Length: 329
Image 1 (cartoon, helix red, strand yellow):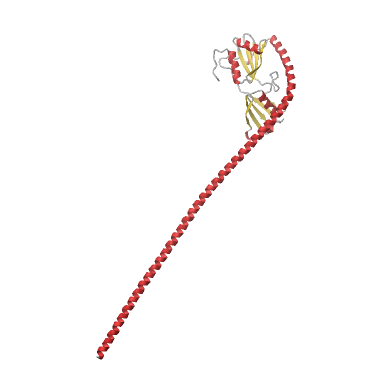
Image 2 (spheres, one colour):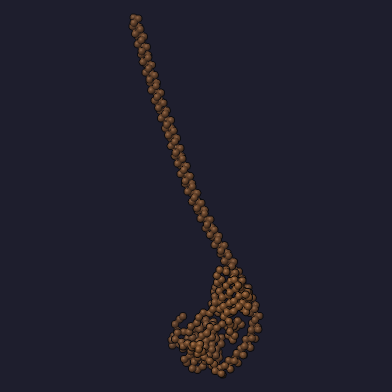
């Protein structure tokens, strides 16, 4: 909250603060000059009385009042408008259906929380200057609000934001709330009767328009709830699809990794077997070559031995023949 100039008159500071805080309710004032009541709806002045003065004149007298004391009371305007009749902050759907209460918050530009409690679901609506900021249905889902709109079985409760007077402003206490003089009470009674008649006349004309507006609001709220539910379902489907795609991609990655490892293992096994086969073949050929070489050498040795023996035999035969020839000679 911006800091106010301490030299600003207290009444001006309070009125500016009410506008800034979007105060809805009654501001009671007591001063040396007179007592007064000022009604505000979302920070906008709805009605003003200060002594015998009303409207703008009451505000002007308030701004000139000396040593005013203030008491702010949170109040809600009635469902058909105005503060002549109090609006209960809690009640049943049998009196005011949820769609009527939602329309009420919007048309009066309220800043509040509205809790709707059905038989098996509860929805908390948050409004700021008549704009719906959130609809918290907890675990009941987006369909909870749509299911409550035309329900007659349940209760409601309003919660208004707290309001405090600016620092340094004299505050009246409820026990010393200003009392009106006889003249002020008579003046108020006449004004109330006139306002009540005018209000009833307007209410009759507004009921039909409000009924149609409520029906349109209900249809619009249902459409928004349906759209929100469809959007949420679409989001959940997309999320599930994304997770499924991620799981499939992870499965493919693992399968590819397993295949790669299997291929590497198969290749390593095939290479090992090929190496063993090559080594066995090389050994076989080496053995065959060694055997062939050994046979060749054995054959050569046998042939040499045979030649030697043949030479020896030939030499012995020649010697024998020579000996026989010499003997014959």
